[in-house]
Amino acid sequence: MDRTVLQALEEQLGQPDMARNFAKDYSALWGQRERRLVDSLEREDQAAALDAAISLKVSSAMVGGLRLACLAQILETAVRHGDLRRGASALALISIHGPATVNELQHQYLRQGR
Image (cartoon, rainbow, N blue to C red; front, side, top):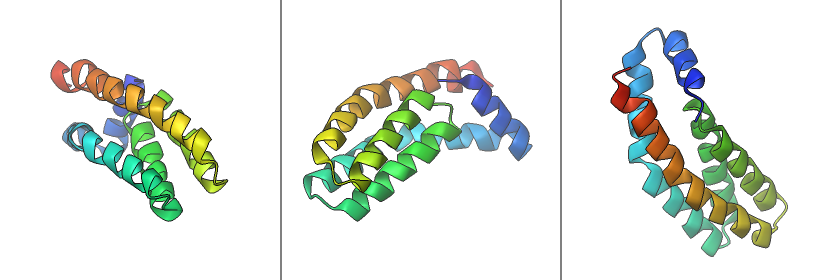
């Protein structure tokens, strides 16, 4: 997790509390995001999987979860090309790095009081 991304978001918004609330929501929604990815890939619903991957990519980048955003980009590309095997591999890594990103976000940003 790149904390400077969140610091930049605080500055852009002009209100640190808004950035913190976004980070809190990101953390709270992790399980739903992951479930949405898994479900859409299991159903082979390309549109839903693409939407979920893009949402994860953008929101992860906004909270400084750059590794996770990169993995979501790989998943997005796989889904666009109909490569479910590659998509499943990316999802496996996302399932590992997602909780780690949330943990880092909570310990390095949300619990620091800033």
